[in-house]
Image (tube, rainbow, N blue to C red; front, side, top):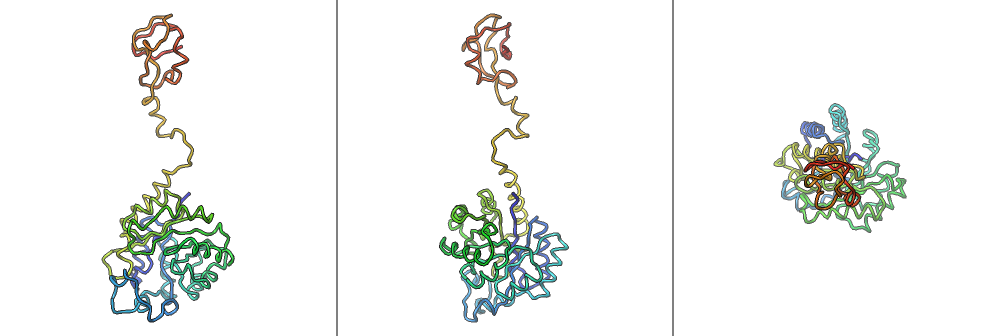
Length: 334
């Protein structure tokens, strides 16, 4: 099964459309399936007095409010037209997370991909959940900061709104940028799938690429990862993002793991069959054996190549008589 890889441009465009288009080109070059932005109206989602997160204070103007910070990162209707066209030009799917009702309506009108994403901060937003998932689309439900009870409640709301459970993918996530390795708890992703009977994925904020690759090995069907053109750029998310070469390496790593996982049936692989006669052993004469001599532990042994009688037939051969003379190291025949 192919993993859906979402390259999260998010707000790393810094309000600059030229930078946003460069991000699209980088995501396409890396081989991601979708490049994702964030669609919101600042005044609809953040009050004027809302403080910034600690990680945001260190990467943006410490004197501005959260609302002022994200207002500069809004994408207009016209911006969306440009980005969608740019994605088409580069052959990559456009995707965006809508954070408010007006933004949900805009994306449904302009870029209805059949997939919607619930960001971690909206997991406990009942009216938002109902409105976003009222159509039977694929729902990616991000679970940063949540416990199992909150996730179960959100899944129930999504189902009641009209989206069946088989169209819900729960994304394990840790809402810290960057996420310390000891806080990842990747096994929680596996347990959520068992607990709720849903597909699972992973939205990653760790440094590097190894954790999302490991998540695929553990069964993630969706991977989402922030990326940027340059981690030193100003803005809230750049420092916890991959740069283009790293994004490409992550995609390649995931595709390799997909091939390596296989179908689960243990059998000789096509590539190793040629080595089977070289690496395995056969019964051979430990010393010269005369015709009519009884095969015994003294005159038989197992040696390569494995083109003769298998040593697993040892007990069947011991006690039988040699049908002809055998020289030392010669393959035994019956």
